[in-house]
Image (tube, rainbow, N blue to C red; front, side):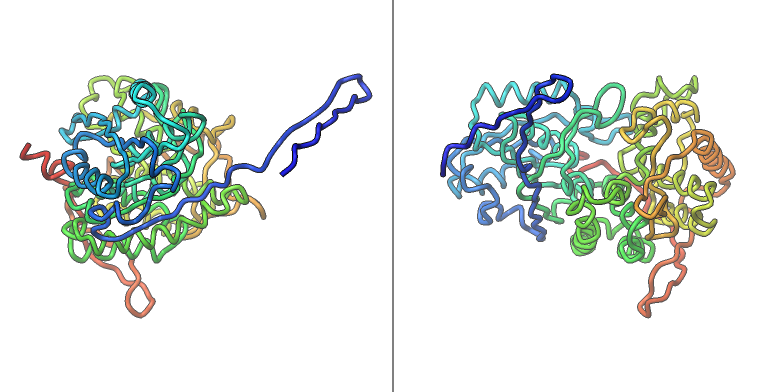
Length: 455
C-alpha cells in the first residue's frame, strides 16, 4: 500500500479553480434468515459482524416485545459471549385500545435513544440490534446510520409488518409532525432475522397490517403471491393468520418477489414505484388518521387511527381507480383490488372523517410529489403500467386523484351489506387456472399481542 498522490486541480476559462473527489459507495447488502423457532437459537448463528463480538452492543425493543422475547434473546447472546445492553421503547395504546409503537416513532424518542447510547458508550464496531416490528426496525436503522456516521445493524423482526416490509429494505426513518417517514436514510442491516413463530401473538388486525404490504407486491408484481396470501384465508378463515407454516410461506414468497426491487434499486424506477404502490395516498391517509384535527370534518374525530398496512390498502384501492381513470387498466383490475382487500379483511375505502381536500394537501409531503403526485400504477393484477419505454412512474393530475377519491368514497357510501358479508375473490387453482372462492374475510379482533389482554 502506498501513500496516495496529490490531486492537482485546474483553472477554467472563467478563472474558477476546479477539483473534485469521490470514492466507491459502501455496498448495500443484507442477508435474510427465515426459520420457525430461530429466535430461540439466535446466539448460535453468528448474526453479528466479527468485529462486534467484543464490542458493546445495544438491543432496542418495545415494552411488549421485551416481555415476550427479550429475555430469550439476551440469554442466547450472553451464552455466546456477546456483550449486549437493552434499551426499551414504550408501547402505547391507540384510540382503538390496541398497543402500538407508531406514536413514538418521533425525533424526540430517537434523540433520547442516541443520548442514552452515547452516554453508555459505543465504538465504531458497536452493533444496533432491533427486536420488534416495523417501527423499532426503522428507528434502529436510523440510529445505526447516524451514530458515528454508521455502525453495524441487525434486525430481529417480530411482526408481519417488519418481515414483509420495514426490515426487508434499506429505508430507515422516523416521522415528522408534518408527515410520515420524512426524516431518514438509506442504510443496510447486515442480517435480517425472521422467526414466523413470533407472529403468533399478533391479533388478526396486526397480522393483516403486514400482509397488506405483502399484497402490495402481489398486486404490483405477482398473481402467485396474491394467491399464496389470499387462498388460505378465504378458505380457512382468520385462524391461518396464526399458523407459522402459512406465515413462513408468505415470508419466503414475499422475499423472493421483493428482493429484485432492492438488488437493482438504482437501475430502474420500477424498483421505486413497486415499494411505493399505494403509498402516495396511503401515507396521507395514515397521517390524517393519527391527526384527526387535520381531517377537515368537524365532529368526526372519533374514528380509530389506521395502521400503516390498512392505510396502504386503501391507497392501493384508490390507486386502482386512478389507473382506470387514466386508461391504464380495466374495470376488472379495479374490482379485483377491492375484492382481494375485502376478502382478507383489509379496509378498502377512505375513512368517513377525511375530506378529499385534506388528503390531497397531505399528499404534497410525499417525497415523490414534484408539483403533482408521482405514482406507480397497475395495468393488471401482478403487472405495473409503463409510462414510457424506460419508466414506470406516472405524473398524475390532482383532478384525477380527486376523482379517484370521489369514486372510492361513493363505493363506500353505497355499501349496504354489514361487515362480514361474503365476497368473492379470484385465486389460482391446482391446475394453474383461476377459480372464485366465497369468503367471509378475516375479521380483525383482539389486542395486538394476546398477552396484552391478560397483563
